[in-house]
Length: 140
Length: 381
Image 1 (cartoon, rainbow over the protein chains, first blue to last red):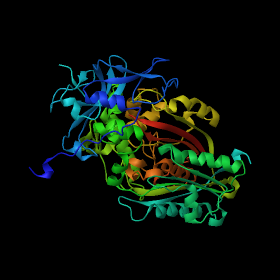
Image 2: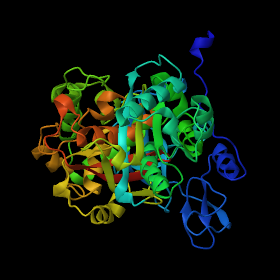
Image 3: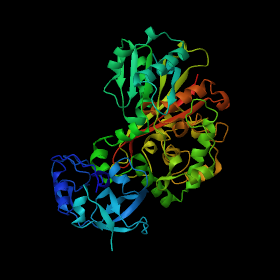
Image 4: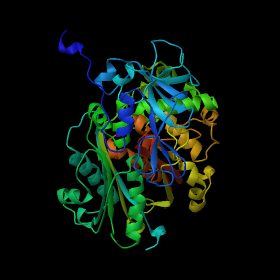
């Protein structure tokens, strides 16, 4: 095996005090997300202050992780070599059942049927740990 | 000095390149010199400077050093594709308030596709930390999600959106400065290689090098019929809040105020120069600015032609989709084309008897969509 056969690593988020609980939980295959203890807003991406009411009291809550694809794309042309090697890849707007909204990568077998409205769940361990951020797959 | 007495008195462009033939300074200076020539001003008369440039640590103050200006008013971008557009409106206010007499507003960039893609990887914190790790594919990945939502919610088709790319290319074929001037049919558009489904190659703006410039000053300094007034302008940032892939962009919040303040209605606009980084965003600007109801731009595109001689002239120089997106110049491309048209200097692509038009900007793409929207209504003197 030569070096060219080793795929480049995924770009990583910069770790900050605000996002460390998210990153650490996901490395264990868990989905921890922020909710404002004052106004109840479900916050993603992680912040120091609630973007709705500016309260600093953002608590980390465990999400069930199941959700629905709102809209999506199959990406053929990437701007980072790690993904070029895996193209085409899927990216989607995901609405989690417990309220959070995010853009995330979706794993699906090549040519697998895919559509808005598809139900998804987080990729389980040990695969989850390969991905820097919460990543989903079609619910089976 | 009242705002009705201050406006655009000159404009100019630098020649565009797919790969930079000179450094950023060269592009900005070339556009600035051409704008001064258009205004009939000497360099020594400029006492205000706005620079909207990408990938540079320099500001309107250090650019003043480089170019040899002493300024009483300066502004450095950028709020992305709205920044340079708004710089012109803010320069009018600066001249009204007596901070400067003549302001040069320049936007530009020196880049090629590879340099832009490298910039996108760290475009802002949200993109670097929460989209790059997913392999978001650059800006096309995000606009693909928005376009699919528009298609599925409203029945908009690729054939309808393709009219924007095809008609703007027809405009570009009459503009020698456009980088992309080859003929394009709807079949060419539909058959282009996929980039991020449902987007194909001709949905995606080409990053390039170039610059655009506007001179703001007392309108009585412009030759007769060559001054352009800004009747009204508005901006809205981070609206709608909390959505990641909205099918509207913020223009809908201020459009009634914008037209009311300008004193004209939609039917009084002789053209629209919008921010066409992707056809879906041009389409959303048509809706949000009220030229058709939300969700009905597909039918609008069925019945209107967007060519300079069509029923709804849009981006009469070919827009970014055919001219290329030269970093900070993209926010001025529409303003410069509007000034050119309102001065009757559009040449082969002149909109007949163009009296007034609307210019819109869009930009600062972050977590899922562009955050900045702006628009201005312009009128010839």
